[in-house]
Image 1 (tube, rainbow, N blue to C red):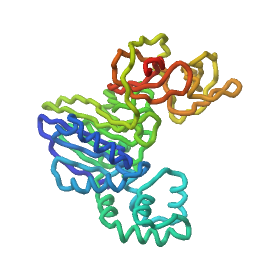
Image 2: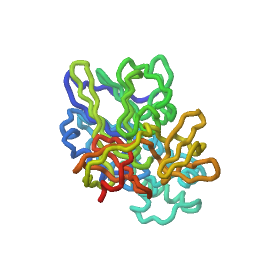
Image 3: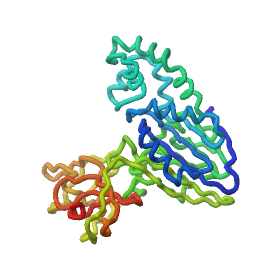
Image 4: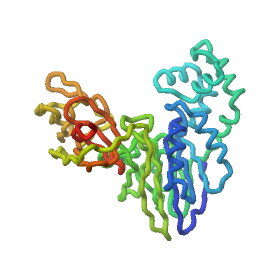
Length: 365
């Protein structure tokens, strides 16, 4: 059975939820210094605190220092579950996993110990070193709960299983439930908050990586794609509870450079708000344009694809990175993040409210 803890948030409260930090301690520090997060009565760190980024140990040590605070809850994600797998599984499977994934906690620990390369020959001794030098980390990750339940809310890292009683969900269903963002059902009778899959992966989340509130299912997805997606961000979901009434907001931090728009610019075309569908790769070309190419998906829907985000062979367009068709208008002096300048007339930017889209490159001058 999954490990569930219960807490009371009270009748009126502000809660901050951060998930999928993925070893980005420096970014996490910036996020938790935001006034919206610092003023929270309760903070939930909702899984996948480690790996992909190169500051996993700092993230864990920070969370371990918070252990015991009544207003802080740390939940286990699928990557924290892997810590125990590193010390129990057959080396062949672990090494295969290492080759297929980005930077991870085990590798960071071995670098801290200056232990040399990780391969078939060295792995047994390195695993022993990991167990000897990091017993606190191993114990901490193993002991984390799988879920938090309050008066109004349930928190899990990745969703739930399709059970009449959500508490019958397995660890796999609450920690690595990839399809949940598309088809998951909330059987808790409360609002469910989870991360794990970037909100960008849902076509219903619009042209941003902000937290995605699905009113119909009473689910909020929080993963801004940090260390996973192009143009991603680290989100904090802000929940305001008032006697059973809930409202949700997003604040975020990212690594992208900031500039002030040099002039006002009104979007000169309307290409809608279509974006790449995970794990979509190729589209059929309908008509080529100077800056955008109209393409058709397998389901028949159309999308304008920026030419700098695709390669073209025959009548096929291959998407090179996460992309969107939306055009944005900006005001002179408006604060923007520069996400990409792939050539051509337009640059890709993010507004302070998280909206992503194309603007005339002249606003950067």
